[in-house]
Length: 64
Image (tube, rainbow, N blue to C red; front, side, top):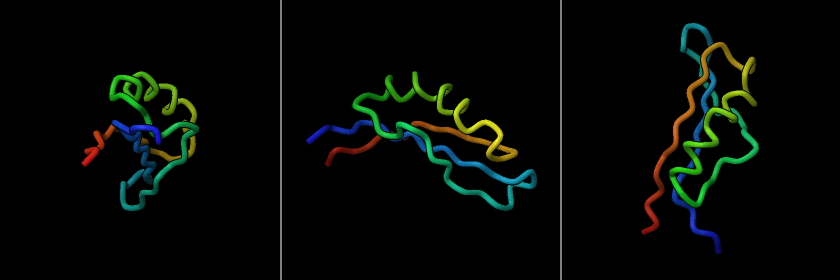
């Protein structure tokens, strides 16, 4: 079983930010937070144009 230390959450929203949804990216789970941080700009590029506002954040996963 692979240890997951971070998740990459990518959310796309309308111009008014009233409607938001999760955007799918090729890789969203990472063994280290640094790997997630390194992948973030590439993930943003992958979803460019899918929403007017896009937010991507690496979230730490508590292994407990």
